[in-house]
Length: 323
Image (cartoon, rainbow, N blue to C red; front, side, top):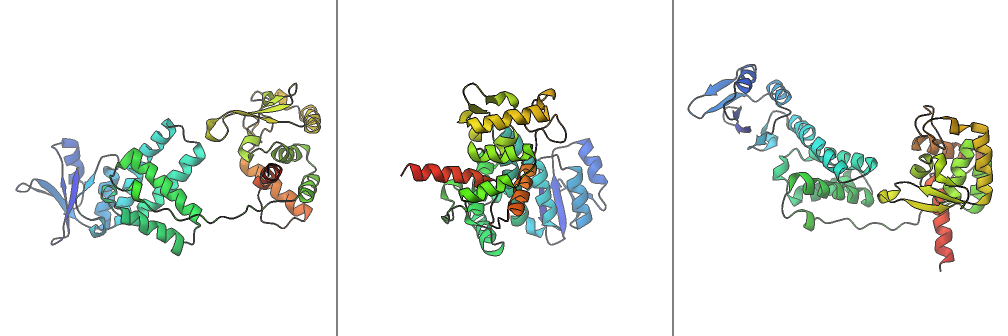
């Protein structure tokens, strides 16, 4: 189904192969007419007509032969593109094994880009992408890392859905600013952990720090992941869907045994080490982050740091010891 504009008469012209169902839908649009000479349907280019048309055909493949800016409301068409193409993109990302977090980020980036450019996706040029990157940096004051994240999201969208030639390899990436991560010293970490009274919450912070775990890894631990014989922790589907082992200190193992005895988490079917309110689900990352923030406040730590800073401290120690 193809749409183009007759700007002189402010009409939207729609052509398609004969289909009685489509014809009935076209007849439901106010003022629609069949043009037997040019063999297309027309209706007035206004917001209500365009909104009704796109709602009726939102699941159809639509081609726009006129520039979007001339239609009554380009944002409606951008919404159509997002509705039609992003689910296809999401499906392909899942098939390729992208994490749920990466999928969410890539979808959000492309959704915002499509609404910004208000242009037929198959007419996108390199200049459109570069203009959007400048918009992210100059007008929205986003970081270079954020802009680079968008470029990765768009390049993947182009590879999997649009397949536009001559864009991906020529896109300019903003140079990343190198900043040292904000880290905590050993004294501050001890104060933060000591500020937590709840044994479950304390163990989340201790494991993040002592084993160098990501918060997503800590909350997804199962009881069976604790190898007490070899004093190791088994991390399932870590970053890049790679399993790995990390060290477990004897003092932390002792604390874990006290926790397991006190909280009886082995009684729940899901066997999460740190179950959430719904015992069949693990504690959320957001909840773990809140535990850390409350502990910082109680310990009087005013640095702008997140729970990942506990892990950064471990990495910092490794870097220093390897020099």
